[in-house]
Image (cartoon, rainbow, N blue to C red):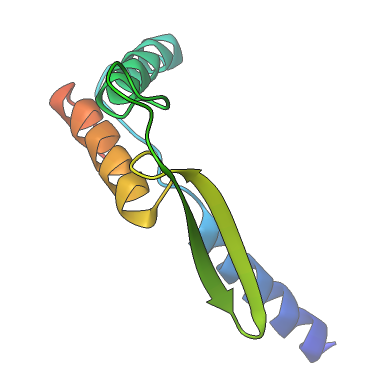
Length: 105
């Protein structure tokens, strides 16, 4: 019985640690947040386009990562690949956009 109780507590703690923090702003309605969230997504999409605009096409490159004894590779346009630094920059830009609108976590 104690084992089941301990497992339940541990599972609840682990699931709570994975929860995404929510954005809040005094007086905010869910509709207002949805609109602000969509506007910030549009701004970020302009800052980090999914396809090259103008100019010559980008050369393709392959990026690989090793997890234990397994390799995982992805091939795509060099500059536009979903690299960790690009994803971090996109997330930071979205966070700054929402913070500029008065939201906090």
